[in-house]
Length: 233
Image (cartoon, rainbow, N blue to C red; front, side, top):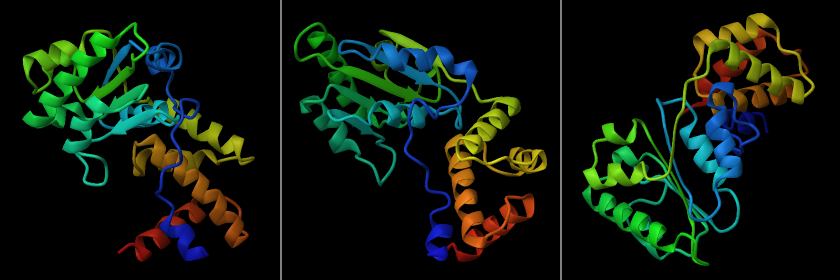
């Protein structure tokens, strides 16, 4: 049981709009909550760690929604993107559009045209896409860059250290925990900026403290990370 606990430490929890942190990205979050009706398109862009994948996965959790990340081997790739044109989905989320190859760009071009033609009809659907740069700066075909900017575009900002600390304390409070300031400060300096990973780490630390019957302290956190490192392949 303990070994499985350690191996699961970095597995991210289910992404939702409610567990996305960062007041600076409130406009994008508001749009994803209230403007993802069929016929709308939203493009999100920002640096790694700004939560693009979290948000796309969050809006595609419901039945009838499709999430695509073509650059990863574990997720649907070129064929899934091409097949999306035939999908009976009410929302299609496509991540990392800046990595699309020419064939995938052609599929996305067709998909955007279909989205526009079907807007306002019973077959209308929502498109939510994300990349690392603003549409005009993407290394894609000009007609793809134009289509990505057809509707709503939001820039995502990295969280400040204060926002990250507040998010970690809020997560701990929801679990009935109190994190020592030195533990949070150590995480902000020495660990990933990815909030999904940090939230998962707080959850794992809670389970680990219960398993070990020890209070949550910085030494316990370091012990947990050491065990994870030692047992990693």
